[in-house]
Length: 118
Length: 195
Image (cartoon, rainbow over all chains, first blue to last red; front, top):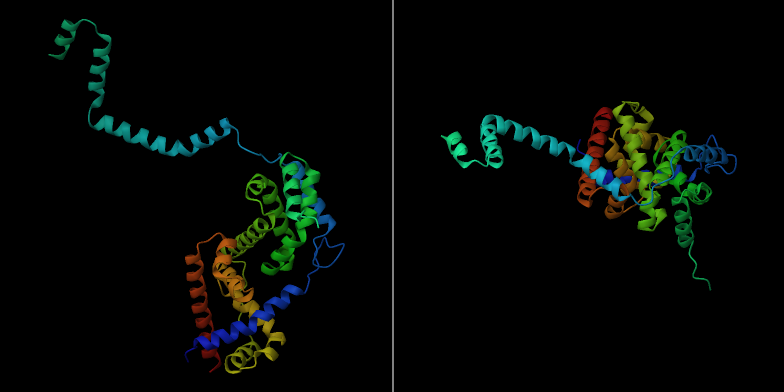
């Protein structure tokens, strides 16, 4: 048998007050030394002792912290790029050209350099 | 007449707590613990409320600087409590700690009556109503469960629900639609079991 939208609406309409009534019946908690449904003093003491063990909350991150956070965020991308560049350098034989450039920069004797190129 | 609002007080306390004043934070806790407890109690079993509220308070402490920028602490606490409850259910479902309950004949008959009967008020007061509610919610996943509770049972709008859960409105609409469809399926399966 098919269930229509009306049946679903009727069930939801009937269950909504049931759900809300469960809300209004205040449960008794372990720490409730005051009203039922109220988180008690013991609970508050537990929370505060945990809070006291923690570092004070940071207001605004310092410049150094912001930079180091950004560096860590960029680290995987940088590592990926380094690997890609390494593979490319290996495959396209850029290393020798780079050496040539290096040589060009350091050698002042143009004759020797032309000899090297030949 | 004084124009001094409690939110202004909150802002001042938050500012003090941000600078490491734990007494100021305790004041904040005393002021808002009932609010957090009430929201948590509506979404998780009573045995979990204290743990959830504690988690929310830790998040509050760690997020004090954000609150100082945003302003409203009550709204922030409501959203964080709802999300912490949602995380609780996600964990429960992931660990398969949700007991798969099958309905008794009385509960099935109760559903059958609700579907065919126009006067739901009398039926809502019966013991079976609570048991069926629990059983139906258990059959939903964590997302559908939260959407069902917030939209259908607590009467929040799609926009409000989206804000509380940190989802987009479109996502809430889709979830609501799916939850209804699932409820239809559950009802159909139950009916087949009866007939």
